[in-house]
Image (cartoon, rainbow, N blue to C red; front, side, top):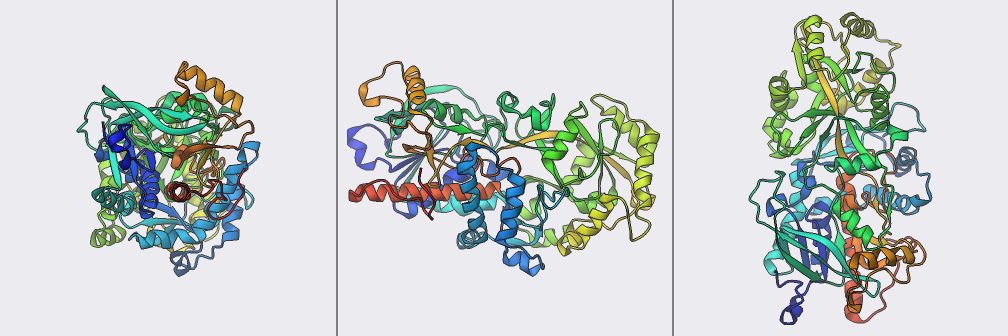
Length: 612
């Protein structure tokens, strides 16, 4: 057992000011803020040190910013007011449970328009000059979508986002302010007199697996650690398909798919959500789940069921499993949840992109740091060569060659035959598919078009960033000079949890009613000693913080229990981890300072806002 946070009386002078459960991005941010204030931190994680940074490491590193210098240089006219409008129409907040998610959304937008860029820049993070246009909506000004490009790509992708927080936390580890306890799985939150005072769990057998590779769950010993504050930062449920199916919103998205790829490693299982709920925490908006529609099987998988998302430009034609073209606005990169519902309403759980070599060269990007080595390794020469190249990037060529979802053909007959070989159900009629492509192709013969997707391509190319790197000039897909033809089978891909632990603007976890919390706590504890009495006494009204318990990151739906509402505008997941980790870390540091000076514990949240 680590002496840091131990109950051994001889080591209490080294006891931590806070325990962080989870060594992902939100946990690192919280630890960074705490150590800046001189506080001692114990970080527990069930995986090994190779997984430090969690899911953020695998990300493309997209960050949502508002009215940034990068936007202004590209003549993108953004504003906080416009972003608030876009967020509100996309989130669709409509529940009593959305009180704190609304407040988190408002605070996050202020952060994205203000402190966020400078905060990250001061840590050494840099951005690429091209701003991406994700989740374009396409169904009306008053509905979901980004009105303007806001997806700022980190120079160095996800590993760089992790690095700028990992390095100062590791420096604090070297000075004794931080201790990591890897292979420590937390199974219980310890409560006393209504407050969370520590954690219990099991140490797991050492694991020498590489980052993301599934590790063993062999138990070795018990552990217990205590501290004035516990911050939960353990992520969502993206690899727990059983839990996803339980809460899947069939009324909004359709039936849960028979086949779903895993966009996150196996350890993303959501177990800490239940543990917090058992301690009396309020858990809300569990049916708000963010999955992608453009998943492909990784030909070189790292974790079980490993899927990769295609981040597409606007030109590929999108067909259902039977070969019927999707109606507007179900175009690549426009409206994830609307297209999800459209796919599942067909009675099948997959769909098809049909395109050609010219489109894939310019418009296909693969999500993930490992799929973008030029950006991840910050190699400007290779990155510029990629932009100028007439060939598709190397990782995409590898998928074309080895990927089970890709069909490359010189003729339409070969293309459709390959699609039917990969069918998980219906057989596509060749003539029907080809006629739909030809109808679309005729709309590219002139500067005008009645085809809404062709109009969307023209609109995209009016933005310099898309014209340079993202949207190919409209042309006939069946033109052999742009060949060969390509079809890609797309499966659904798990990714993010948009609901979770309900928190106020300090990241304090809120309680359910005291009666329910006490009942569930007593049942779990089985009559423990009075000093460890469980249940949250005095929390008779919802909205009362559980003393000593904080949370940040995806476990909170990235803030408040679901600040995104029903839809994500993209670039907001890493930012949500950073913002919520920052708020929780600063709040615990300030509370610790107040306690040390003997001042009262209650106060207003950092940055204002109401305390309920």
